[in-house]
Image (cartoon, rainbow, N blue to C red):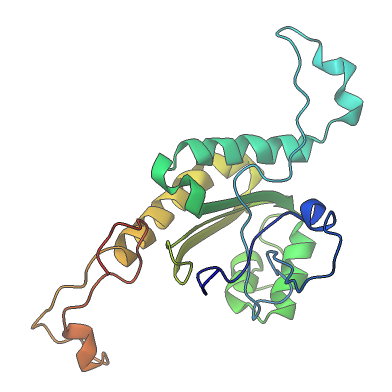
Length: 211
């Protein structure tokens, strides 16, 4: 439409309903391909909930429930409640449980030395075995060109601490990107001259903000 819309983001099930063939790009976390553009899904995306009356015996349906998915759902719900309402439509959240082996294989494939050193000690042994919980949160600018993202990976039993750290890191990054850069006379070593000049914010999260 007059060059204003480049494309639409729809679920795979909706795309499959189209009668004709159209050009498409699959959006995903792209964990195995860090060089590709990634996509953090909307909060609570992909969950199937069973709703029952108050007092319904949960044990009746436990055989069809997924404890890992339920755990992820509770964390995503808590994170969603902590996000300002005006940022919900611009923010993606993803939580899942992952095995240590899976994380290490991915880190090795991606040459992620930081993750390897954080999980492996000097004797080449895993610092602490057990399943990890991985949390991601990312907020896009209104034009979709800039994003503020934070990630946390840690033991399941410390998921509350990880949630707090995740939100603090995300909030700090978001504040930095949406704040104007004030001019300064203080010279910082190895930084270009442009760094000391006044500049507008790198990221806009409201369409009514000045360009």
